[in-house]
Length: 200
Picture 1 (cartoon, rainbow, N blue to C red):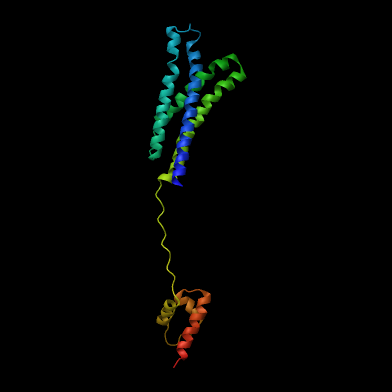
Picture 2: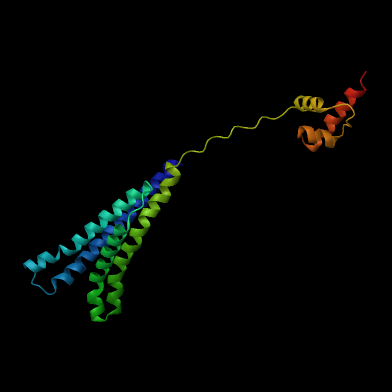
C-alpha cells in the first residue's frame, strides 16, 4: 500500500512540474516579444529580450523547489520568500498579458492569461500535494494492539469467592458488581456460589 502511495506521489509531482515548465516555456516567447518591442531579429536588443523571462522563471523555480523541500521537513518560509514568489509570478503575468490588454482583445487576454494562471495555481498546489501524499508513507506505523486476554469462568468465580463475606446475599447483580462480568455469566456465577454454600 505504501509503495502505491509513493508511486502516485512521484507521478503527481512530475506531472505538476511538467505543467509548470511547459507553462513557463510558453510564456517565454510572449515575454520575448514584449521585451523586444519591435527590435530587428537577431539584433542585440532582440537577443537580450530572450533573457528576461528565464531570469524571472529561474528565480521562481528555485523558490518553488526550496518550498517543496522545506515543507517536507515542516520548515516555514519567511515573508521575503513568499514576496519573491508572488512578485515573480505577477511579473510573468503582466509581461505576458500587457500587449493583449493594450490591443483590447479579450481573446488574446484569455490566451495569454491561461499559462501564467496555471503556473500560479500549480506553484501553490505542488508543494501541498506532495506533502499530503508523502505523510501516509513517511508517518510512523501504528503499533499493533495486543489482544485483551479473556477472563475464564474459574477466574471470575475466584474473584467472587474472595469478595464474598459473611452475611452477603449472593445475587447476579452483586456478582456483576464485584467481578465486572457480563449479565449472562453473572447468573451462572451466582448459581455456582449458591451451590457451594449449600454443599455439605
